[in-house]
Image (tube, rainbow, N blue to C red):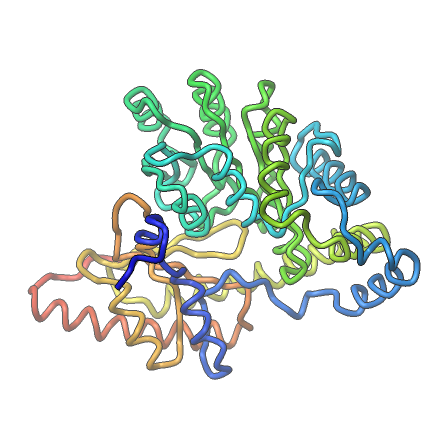
Length: 411
């Protein structure tokens, strides 16, 4: 057969998450797989109202082509919100609207990465970034990460050893998949190293406003006086994902290049969707809606943690995130989450195996659980089913390998 496709297609694979979500559309499946916000908090009535208002007032402009940079009032609103919430000092001219922050990752890959360039990331890291950047055939360097962020000594060693590092990619707030949040000190140390080695930092922050406990920590970009930090944001997790309203915040030397590649990608993001988002932000309190979301998500996290404590077999470790959408689970060595998943699907419960979140190596004894999109009773039942299947699998593994179980601990 003739080879019709570009060489890059040899390494690109469908997202594990997107493939699992096809299965979890069945109503009987209890899904902890996707990073889905709770749909009951989408302000549907208010969106319908502002959408009609936009069409009545600016229908021809809302349905027309627009500038690549995005709807000017929305850019101003985003810059003001970031300055208030993240401690940055951005102007509207330093905001580029994107079709979700996932497009931002693709555009960043286009302007920075050639084949065999190096991307440094947390271990584990966000699967969507791996997929976006892998199109450009980079090498990945994973840095060990604990509850406070990257191991800075390991990062310094890697930056001193590697000569072709083009990007450092991090998710400092309630990271996907681990749920970890970086300390202020680690953020400062990362920035100092990046500036010293003259390497751009991509700070991905889709979950920063979903904090259940503790005080907000300043964004890395807020401490950056050199313009080396590029941040990504989105309304998907705090408003609604279907509008696909995201943005990149960066100094003009980077943003001008990003505008050029976005012109080639889609000309501009939906004018209508941007105007609807802008009108909503001007007319309603998104902060009030976020407060309602946080009450529900905190309760669902607590229910999932308690269920894991009660149901999980010995030897399983799990995180207790202070915000975000995800909880990270480490199974005993030798237990493969990819083998566990089809058994769980037969019992109508789903999760995401953790191996895909490690771009340079595999840790197949890990998995990610989402707690935001299921009511509390289904969370309890789903963890009960998952734990029962895991116990069966561990018993089989123990019989074959004669390994005594360890003690259950929280991460």
